[in-house]
Image 1 (tube, helix red, strand yellow):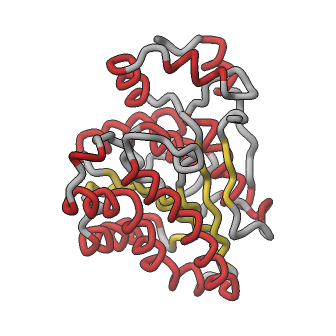
Image 2: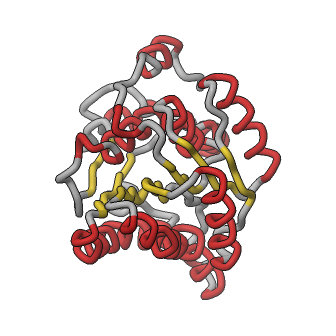
Image 3: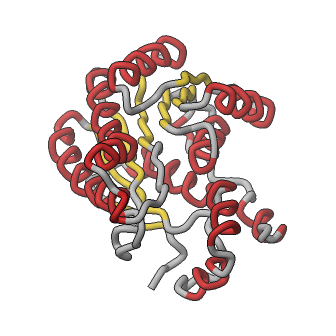
Length: 268
């Protein structure tokens, strides 16, 4: 399956401009590919000072170069394994020295690999939570002081609609992603007095290169069948998620917090 050119053209129309974002320090986790790379590109296009974290240094370097050429605003990056919290904190500190105070955090990194329930060990369960949930909290913990000192900020946690649909084969992922909604609400309550807004985005099935290749290998019919459950008969692409994140990061959403925004084409 290839993504239809008309759909690609439609999703790449010029995005809204948010003057309140220009010049702000933005940290994005998992920014080397897929939704993360689109987030990096969109925030760079807004004139933000963007730093991102990515596991693979070669992927990160290629992404930074490409986005720099496309937007004229090259992002900074650090190659970090987010399962290592000390390394995460060190990476954030290093990026802070390059992009300035972090006013916006997008906790995007995650991995939705599948494994049958019979093969899930305690060690694998813990590793999946480290990959999909734990680092989000500790990234928040690392940036809250500077956000508060600067007068406020915006945090966006990436969830998923998979747990809302009871998706099979990845219960360790759906459990972690359902926790993102609860964590978001509690963080919003705790940080509200410091003028820090916390929201989450729950995407549907977004056609990143990784998702397309996996579906082609495992389940070719998924492309047409998934559209049958969407109200809008177009596949989601990474910019559809990135543009929601721009709005939630900008001052235009200044009194929106503790919410989860579902971007899934209307799955019913």
